[in-house]
Length: 85
Image 1 (cartoon, rainbow, N blue to C red):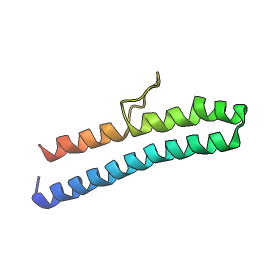
Image 2 (image 1 turned 90 degrees about the horizontal axis):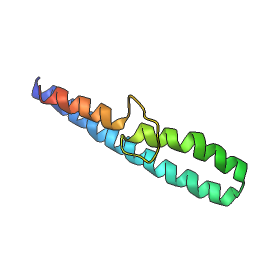
Image 3 (image 1 turned 180 degrees about the vertical axis):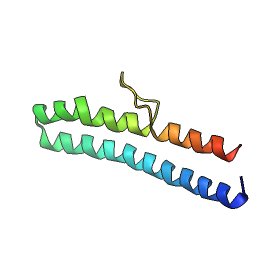
């Protein structure tokens, strides 16, 4: 792989790391919003569906039973493999 292409891949990893951080921040913002709304039905919906989906999209390491076959960790690992080929 040419150095120029490796640089593009490294830049892609940086963008994915930033996106991963923004997902984590979004989860915290959603939790804060749920506290303000103080509605059990809305909180249950977010806790059952939205928050786990975001967590599974951000990382392979999370507190939920499910998984996402393509998440930020797997994308970055794939790119690392390509760089090192």
